[in-house]
Image (cartoon, rainbow, N blue to C red; front, side, top):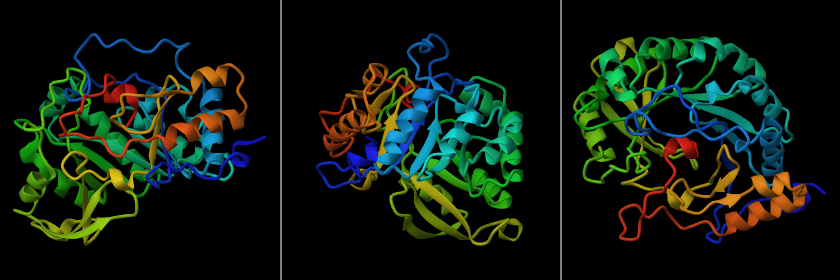
Amino acid sequence: MTATSFATVLVDRFGRVATDLRISLTDRCSLRCTYCMPAEGLDWLAKTDRLSDDEVVRLAEVFVGLGVTSIRLTGGEPLVHPTLVPMVARLAALRPRPELSLTTNGVSLTRSAGDLVDAGLDRINVSLDTLERERFAQLTRRDRLPDVLAGIAAAAAAGMSPLKINTVLVRDSNLAEAPALLDWALRAGYQLRFIEHMPLDADHTWSRDGMVTAEEILELLTISYQLVPRGHDGHAPAEEFDVIDGPNRGSWATAPGRVGVIASVTRPFCRDCDRLRLTADGQLRTCLFARDETDLRAPLRDGASDAELGAVIATAVAGKQAGHGIGTPTFVQPDRTMSAIGG
C-alpha cells in the first residue's frame, strides 16, 4: 500500500493544505553567521543520527504521495552534503515530480552549479548579507565573499532562473547597505529578498526591539527607489514590489526589477502557511518555531510501511498550530537553531 492510497492531501484543523516540504540534509555549515550560530561550541549530529540518502528519498516519496508538490533542500549548508547532486537526481525521479529548489550560502557553488542543474534542480536561493568583504567576514566569521559571488555568477551561468538572493539586515552592521545590495541585484538580474531576523539564534540574544523591521527596510529603500506593491505570489512568504525607478535604472538587467520583503515577525503569514520541515535527524516540524516535533526516523527504521508513515505525518499536520506566536506572552524560542532546523 502506498501513501497515496492513505490520503491525497495534508490538511490541518484550520484548513491549510501542506504542499511545500523543506528537507534539511545536514546541520553542518561552512560559515558561522553571527545571527544563526555561535563562534564555537555547537555539536554536530552524529552520522547515525542523521537520515541516510535512502531514508530521505523514502520519506520524500511518502510526502509526495500525500500531496507535496515542492521540495526545498536546506541545511546547515546543503552543499557540504557529499552526495547532494545524486540526491537531487533521485528526488527529480519521483512521480509526480516535485519542484526542486535549494537554499545555500553559495561558498562552494562554483563546483556544483552545472551538475545540480543537470540533475534536475529547478531553483536556487543564495544567502548574501553584504558586498563588503570585511563586513562579510565579521557577519559570517569567514573570509569567503569572493567565493560566494563567484558561486552566484556560476549559478546564473548554469541557467538557474529566477536566481534569488536572501539578505538579513542587522542593525549597526549592514543596514545602510540595503540600497547598494538592491542596485547590485537589479544590475545583475537577480531577485533580492530582505528577510527579518527571526528568533532562531544559538545564543538566544534576539530581541523584537533590536531587529530591523520590514517597515524600516521599505522606508530606507524608498529614499532611492520607487516601489509599487505586487502583494504575495500565492503562498510565497515574500511581499513583492516592482522597482520601477531608481538612480541607475538604465543599467538594470531587467526593467522593472523586483524586490521582496519577508516579514515573518512583523507581518506574519501563518494563515496561509503551506510548509513543513524535515530535520536532518528525521524530525517533522509543522512550524519553523514549533517546540514539538514528530519523530519519523524511529518508525522508518522500525520498518513502518508507507501507509503507516503517512498516518503519522497526517496526524502531525492535523495538529499544526495556528501561528508562531512571536510577540505574545507565551512565545518561547525553540531550542534548535536555524542551522539545526533547516530553512
